[in-house]
Image 1 (tube, rainbow, N blue to C red):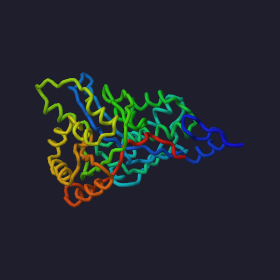
Image 2: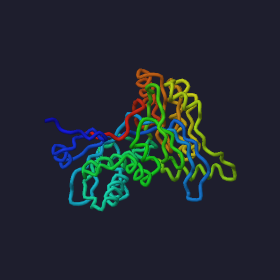
Image 3: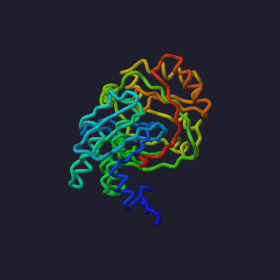
Image 4: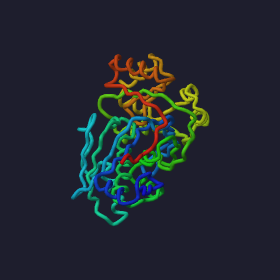
Length: 320
């Protein structure tokens, strides 16, 4: 008799699934690029209202949850030494919040295989939080609803819900309230990884400083950009890319201007700082152009490395 399958996760629901979960559960979760990041003025709670158009891209972290005597976190991969392994890690916090909701101890070992740039404006930490949440839910056999998981994601951070959902979405509020968006084709990207990171709070603080005394308009998603996503038109999307945090990121890291110029000089359709930076994103017309632009960026000496990716990508996905 064949093993029953959980329709929410695609994993087994009987004794085979229980045995597999006991051995460990791995979740793959994507990076993101903000194809539009419209930022309003600071709110009384210190956050900013956003119109944040997320697009998941094919750079991934993998989070594996296995039973343990206590909550522990380990990490491997590029810049793993920059990833906190204590309770400040969003993966650890995800396990704690999920366990607290169900009245159980967060006894789990979380191992992060990291390939998303660290502190690079691509939501790597948020991805790990979403990945850990889904992995622990499966490991502990909780079968939480999508709505419950998204509630916990929103509690963890503004970008975490999208890391769970993937694809493309418009995030409003502080970015955590999502409306999924249709995408009519594949988009090709190059991401230039800078040396060191940029603190997201510091970039928002610089945004506030640069806009001090000015009226900051309410954030609104661009209809032109949304239509370009829907139709899969890379040229139209290139003309609509926008990031209100880019001037602040460039103010804190002026060297990013040279990286942006190097990518556009090499033939990218458009360039922008990814989220709060310092990773820079280059939209290109096809896979061949992506390889060419990536090579030119590395040769320019304006970045540490360059990564090629496509979008949209699936959200947090159970691998086993």
